[in-house]
Every structure is written in C-alpha cells, then in structure tokens.
Length: 370
Ligand code: GLY
Image: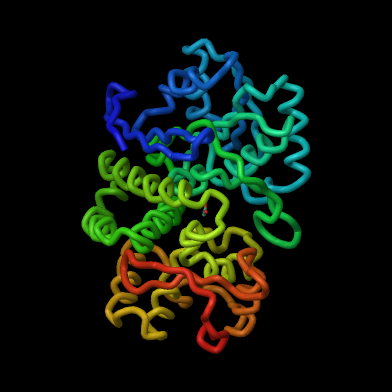
C-alpha cells in the first residue's frame, strides 16, 4: 500500500491487487470521481468508454463522472438500467450487450460499471462475455460495493434457481472508490455495507475490529479519514485473499463468513429487499460465532462482543432482530444446503477460534447447525 495524492482536496489511498498480468489498482478517496478521466486515460488504447449505471446515480454523480471523462478527452456514452436485483437477469443482460455493441464498444475500450453491487456484477459479466472479454472499470457507489463486490473479479447474473449462478471471473482494469459518494447513501444501505467491513476484522484482523469498535461512530457520522481508512483496510484484506486464491479454490472462501447462514434468510425472502445482503451477512456472522462457541472452538465472551458491535451499528445479530415469519430451523438448514458453495453435498462453513481467527470447515454436523 502507498499514499498518493490524486485529488488535491484530499489524500487518496492506493491498494494493489497483485494478479500478475491481471493486476490492478484500487483508488480510494473523497471526490475521486472528479479524477476518473485522469485515472482511466492510461488504461485506454483509444479514448472511448460507455458508462453503465442505474437510475439511482443517473443525476449529479453521473454528470460529474461524465464531466471528468470529457475533461480528459475521453468519449463516453451512457446506458441507464432499472435499479434492483431483478436487473441481474438474462433479459437485461441481452439488452445491455446489444446496447454496448450498438455503442461501438471494442475489446480494448472500457465499460464503466458505475453503481452498487448489481451494476458491478451485471456490467462486469457483460464485459466478460462481450467480444469474449472487454475491459471494464468499477466505480462503486455503495459501501458494500466499495469494500467487497467491486474487488476480486466476481461477476454474475441470477438464475431462476439461485443468485449469481451464471457468471465469470473477470478482473476490472481499475477500481475507483469515491468515499464521498457515501454521503448520500441511504442509512440502511450504509449499515448493510458496514457488515462486510466488520467481516474483514472478524476473519483475520483483530486490530481492525478494535479500531472499528472505537471509530464506528465517526465512520457513520461521515468522517472522511475514518471512511477512507475503513475502505482501504477492507480492500487490502480482500486484495490479499484474492491474490492468494483468485478462483476460490481455498482461502477465498473465508470471505463467505456469515454468508452461508445469511443465504438462508435472503433466499427465504426471495431476495425481495426485506432483508438486505449485508443484514443477512451480519446475522450470519453472529450465528457463525455462536456456533463456534457452542462447538467449544471459541471463548464464550466472543459472540456477545461481536453481536454488541453489530447491534450498535444497527445490524441484526439474532433472528428475532429481523421481523419475519421465518421457516423453522430444519427448513432454514435445507435452504443453506442449496448454497452454491456446497461440494459433494457438504456445506463449507466459516467458523472462528476468536476475533480475527476464522477458518474453513466441512465438519459441522446437521444436528449442530439445527
Ligand atoms: N464476495 C466474496 C468474494 O468476492 O469472494
């Protein structure tokens, strides 16, 4: 990691994702979309891009991004899609690919995914398959996308049979995280993204978890330095894991802490927005720590410390925190078994020996899960 000064009004941070010929930089700082042209220009063989975004950012943020590109002499067009998870389907992908081809996008041009996780996944997947692979840039606008989904090259759309089942690994050419875009993010979205920030502390960085306990309030109050630090540490953690295991043959699965439990709650609500992904992950992480303690792997005080932090951030840590008519435990466990990380019928779970000490296991008996 190194410090650079792309934006005069702020210090930005640079995190490198080391993947040989597919290596790239993540730029983090307040106001960075105004430098998007400068950051992208060296990556282009001709000055042509298409921005893919949804209606949520189609106002002022899009106008600023467009102005930054134009100021660097980069031609750009825009494709604006309906917001929400339902856009991650074949029909929208087909329309998007047609529109990108109509815009004259070639392999060496850049598609800019400007939005949250849905836009990143969808535009990234279009980039992966269009002309057998076009370059793309992630400009994430939500906390969740800035700390997780925009980094690491997972792209996908949903199948009727499950979320993200049709996809590809396709790394972006760069990621530009403008932390000031979070100033207008709805509170609930900010909290949900924060669950993924906490996740990095819980997986492998006890000091970061301590830092979050002290700095959570500043981060939520919009302190630029706190936000930049939290995003940078999260991206560094993710970059290290992705560099070690790009295609999730092993250690990358640690990033699924809380996700297998969480998946049951998202799937039980048909991903209809009643439970946001980050909320499900928060609850799932609290459950993973409780299970770890129940199995004698983790000290008894730890799950309470985790739950207290999540609840202080307005996130669920117990099933009762998410009001819904949930299926019973047996059916929730059945839904967990449909998780795409199942190998030979066995669930891979992420459990922990303590804060910052998570590990993978396929040895949890169904009775213990229940
Ligand atoms: N969001 C988990 C991963 O990128 O592997």
